[in-house]
Length: 110
Length: 114
Image (cartoon, rainbow over all chains, first blue to last red):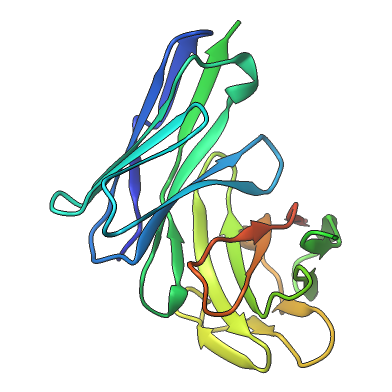
């Protein structure tokens, strides 16, 4: 299965701190994506990193990908209370099948 | 430009009834995915379709569940003879053909089986 596994499953930090979430997967991928889900809502795409890329930035987000270790990390810098949500990694394999991990629940305390 | 539309947002059924969940993809998107989510859990892949074709249904239970994406109209996820274990949020997402797989999600349909 390509399903990613995020860790930690839950993370609680103070506003202004950085939050780091990790994702591991099992098979080869075309790209890896991170999504955010607010409670009771649909998922929103945050950032995509291709299999031949090692690092990517978007605003306060930084994603790394290590294909040799089959792992990725998402760093949110200078966190805000509004960043409180669940974060999921998703792997994209053959035929564009998109498989999600179990998620990290982030709480940012004001 | 409307996003992915799912309806109904909430559906209550009694055991043994049928549930039909509908998903209209974003304009210009030809691929639709269905996922199931239990409370406090991740998204479990169910099925991936393009118009008039099922690409991957490896996550669909063999019985009672079916999905279609006709040439005209929304994609439908159909659950026959529902049981309490079918209670969950069902999310639909769409993407463009031939692109990287970035998905655009609807707000989900929450099924409760009494």
